[in-house]
Image (tube, rainbow, N blue to C red; front, side, top):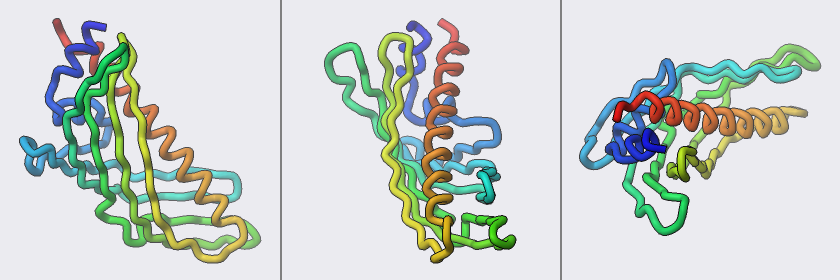
Length: 171
């Protein structure tokens, strides 16, 4: 619990840096105003009958302090992320009825809130993504599964990284 208190006492930019995974780059644009660029590694996501890949996505991030509030749960910060390189960012390979590849452009926005309760990190994400999907049987379902799984796994990885960061902070 002490490690979590120390972690949440850091600046928003430092917390963002602690959340970064291997291969991430967090580049301050105007740290005092909470502006950062986040570069993530490329992704290749295998699904039954399909594969979705993304070259390194780039996000503009704005991080703001939150008001902790009353009770056991304390919210620490809110961050907005906007996808900056969405044109033709998704490559989708479908193996049925014949091998076909599509490039799909996307616009994306995410609002994350980070807080803690006792020794536990809490994070919630509201994700909005817009894509124009070609009318190909099964493609819409593939994209829904990809977006849901990718968002869920990314959130879990960020929470785990914050917990490890709290454990590494010295008293």
